[in-house]
Length: 200
Image 1 (cartoon, one colour):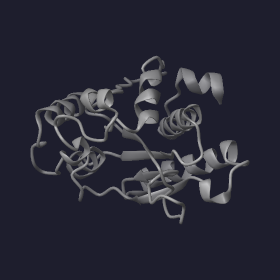
Image 2 (cartoon, helix red, strand yellow):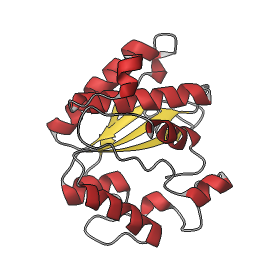
Image 3 (cartoon, helix red, strand yellow):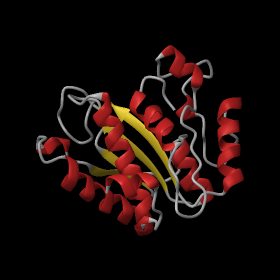
């Protein structure tokens, strides 16, 4: 979604190569190519992830195209990958959303998020301060004009926003964490990927 959140689209490009044991894995690794080329949050269409109001048409042609892909595939789950300068719920130097998995409100959606953050903390966060532990973030309920909110509010499907922190982490770590969160969320839905078989 954002050209200045490199981990999300780089992880997406690597996920393109994954095989999945059943169903179809659809990936849009570079949703806003113009923003990526500029290295900025906003591309020529503006702030892309504020263009998906629930119950109305997306507000730009690019957002409409992305939503068309979502509707065409009728997904069982949607995962939107981001990074943030700060850490959710902590008093770090930067306010932010990092180290959180934001989920739909239903227990069916929150339980995979909780299981995922626990797995991430067990596997990757032992050498980091406690403030870097992954947590389950605030609820995605359709109230914001964001892609994951529209998935939850309009399609009534589980939607997740994954946020890793850029604070004192290098890009390769951010990408690894992003791919591992996605792997654990998919596994919670009974889906195994080729990445999981090699790394978990």
